[in-house]
Image (cartoon, rainbow, N blue to C red; front, top):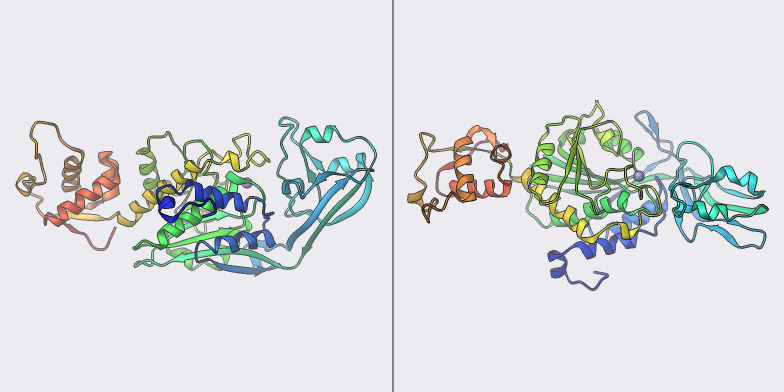
Length: 438
Ligand code: ZN
């Protein structure tokens, strides 16, 4: 791709291509509506088959209303010498997202209530929004604020807040089963990398990977503005949501920490067990936390009227790392290898979902003799190999009540090994699938 890596290199190590896409999307000024979201989706549409939806401002979506559309062209604060002391063109975090247009001259004292800084992190620009109340403001490094002398300043926010649309993107990959897997990520943060871009990039590469695979399950990827986008999607897809069997919200998934998995509201859904199983077999340390009605769009998917089995996969927990919602959440904060690691981990999770099913042992009275079939103890006395152990577990628990994921959890063996064992046993006529697929 842009780094000159060919498709073969990319398959072996997708990290650089994922990070290149993240850097390309970084300068775009996204918000919950507007051209920044459209540009982002247009770029993703070059990678995956993306259907873009436009929902008019004023549309009622459950208890919410689709807001007016916000677009920004320029914004600055100029000193008496005409120099831009705060300049949107240098960093789009400098403007409070959804600021109403302003063009005035005012004293520093008048301007001061509209300036947001982080005194404890004086070199960083904070990220601020004013989506659901009309106001305006600028964000800047506290050190730069302290350097502003008293005097008159020319303030300009060249933005439009007007009836328009809320934009979201959807990529649907049909499988042989109508049962769906939902992958959701927010596309409403401006130049922030771990928070929003990492999820967007991982979801895009995941969709691209799945598009080339044969699929039992159907997959639906939604790229939506946070909160209002998920509410809008759910209100327009109430029936379709019933087909969702498993789901994940992806966010903050490219930093250097181990994974944090937040369980769905149900807590023991297959997706919860699949993610916990896969994370448990990674060499890196990971954390699992219970559902709470705060965070990202799992709040909407897990609202009681839907109660969908949707968890949230992160690395660092949102709100709990110093770079969160600041200019330090930049491309360097996200690591290419961590993006690739997230992609590989999700591929393993989806392998579990694709192949989890119950089987029936066709020789349930005592163990079948595996040795005479060449399946066991080729070299005696050296202890039992992992695959042989997996075959014993699969044979023992395949009475129709347990799926391969149940067996993997109970045996503490990786799902891939359990699945391989089941395939071998089936090929030797010792195992038959239970219908319907579990
Ligand atoms: Zn955020």
